[in-house]
Image 1 (cartoon, rainbow, N blue to C red):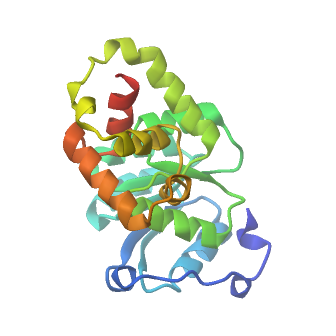
Image 2: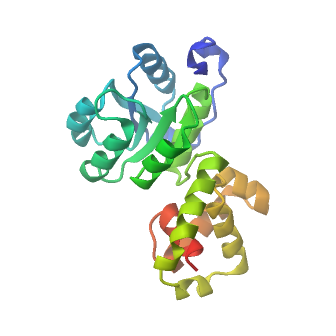
Amino acid sequence: MRLLKSKPAEYPLPRMSTRQATTPIRIAILEDDDELRAELAGYLQRFPDCQVVAQLADGETALVKLPRLKPEVVVMDINLPGADGIECVRCLKDSVPGALFMMLTVYEDNDRLFRSLLVGASGYLLKRSTPAEILEAIRDLRAGGSPMTPQIARRIVQHFQQTRAAVAPDEDLGDLSPHQLAFLDQLAKGFRYKEIAGNLGISMDGVRSHVRRIYEKLHVHSRTEAVVKYLGR
């Protein structure tokens, strides 16, 4: 993990919007490596839009403390001792409603990462990510994104393609414009919002507008629900 390869001062400080600066993101970090956990927490706490409410080393403690602390984003090591990251996500989705979970892993263990997404994680990063990349992913999660690699996105697509026969065709897709269908296709391929904006030549305001209108037309509340309907068409 590059967290320990360079001094924190060497990392650039990403810019914040006014909204980010005035509404801190409540963050919990679950990582059994004490040094990594402390360094990531120290880096995130340098930003006014980040409030680290918990730094925990094991899943059992998280299951007890996080329902009370109510974090918005949980950065979760997938290989925690005791109750691992996947089991923690499964349990915390009910006890901390609305929380977003981002998995951290040393290797691209597609099977375990895929299972973590199926139980409710919103994305994942490799531990070699820089602190600035983790911060960007946390902000992306809060804005509605799902940071993950194309390989994991492809696994999700394959899963729903294999089970699409069980998904009833949805007439709501007929209400989508060609631009909205193109946007939804990009979502299904696993692109992040910034990448979609570049691919389709639209602004981030345009991205947010597409997301809002697609969710309304499909009667869904998340990216995964929208992709399921799209792949089950």
